[in-house]
Amino acid sequence: MQGSPRPQSGVALLLFLFLLFGIGTATALSALNSSRARLEQERQTHLALQQAKEALIAYAVSVYPAGNNRPGDLPCPDIDNDGKKDSPCGNASGTTGQALRLGRLPWKTLGLADLRDASGERLWYAVSNNFKENNRHLSLNSDTTGTIQVVEANGVVISNVIAVVIAPGPPLQRLNASAYQDRSPGGENNPANYLDETASEDNTNFVDGTTNGFINGTVRDAQGRILVNDGMLVITYNDLMPLLEKQVAATVMNCLSAYAAYNDGTENNLGRYPWAASMASSAAGNYNDTANTLFGRIPNLMCNTGGEGAAEAACSPGAAPPITGTNPGMLSNWGAIPSCTVNDAWFRDNWREQVFYAIADAYKPGVGVPACGSCLKVGSANNRQVAVLVGRQALVGQDHADKAVIGNYLEGENATPYDSTFEINATSLNFNDLLVFR
Image 1 (tube, rainbow, N blue to C red):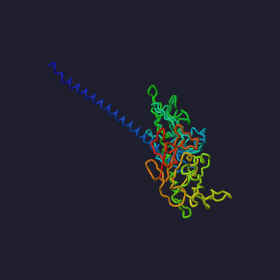
Image 2: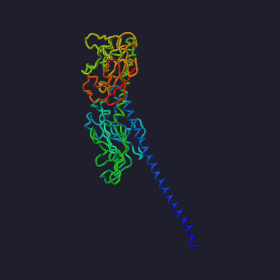
Image 3: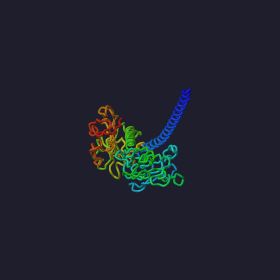
């Protein structure tokens, strides 16, 4: 009789184990669901940030290079929350308007939907003074760098940042604040109601060209309190500049190709290209073509290439005798080619020092239809008519202030262009030339 309670004990133990298992399973499922929800929120926020970043890059690259529009320009932020850019965001030197270079993403200007992060908030955006699209004081080319610094939550510093896109996340109580961020309509344009701070960094302000930039969340204090939940994606020099360089090279090549193909029945370029502006003359400020020059910068006028008639009046100002050039039947200006914009401000004020071209001897100005006999070799490609070269950001030992020296812009075989042989190579510490050719 004494052993009869044992089966009841066993049942109780089994029930207890089932209960523990159920609690554990419920806890695990709850944690899993919470993790899934968090991952979905992170995915939603990252998708919005990525769309914004891609749209900003597309905006900068797709600016049609004509007149005063230049590749690389980014819009000023939206300051009044209407979805449109607000200009100007500071003067030319950047000494004013620092606060105006931080605002919301101008989603309407960018042609985007009304992007929101996982907390339902619109995205914020900051732009480097060097890349804002108004009140320029510097050229925008391969030597132009971003002026914003961003620190990751793990302490990694990202410099040379061109723009920052920010997801503000849900409201927090900012450091030393007595209340949570006020996101009512009355406070919707105050960045302090959306962006966060630590003891050393405040995301509501940044100063171009200094270490006062932004810090990417999530950042906690020693007690585990979240100080920063702002999520960020940055546009760096390497995100944007290679795309701009390719666009510039392609635009110049298209211009040269259109020049070679030009034939209006009176003037016929015969498939030939204009003499280049020599390194020496262009460095001295004369960007017109130089006779018998197969390599150099893009000329403003091609008076030594062609030139007669009313279309060439610029080559013979006043009472000066008409300039006939190597072949008077060839164009001596770009104006007759509507698709060619290399005389516009976007190129003249930004890129002309860093862009070069070489023409094969067979395709130099002259008479008769050319054919390869002595043509260019570009990489492994033989019998090339013309090559466009972009001397990218100055490498160690190069000085773009000395404009007459080819080696200050180009490397390897490209620094000795008069042998008609050019090099295509991977970008490295010793080589970064960009070449396109036909």
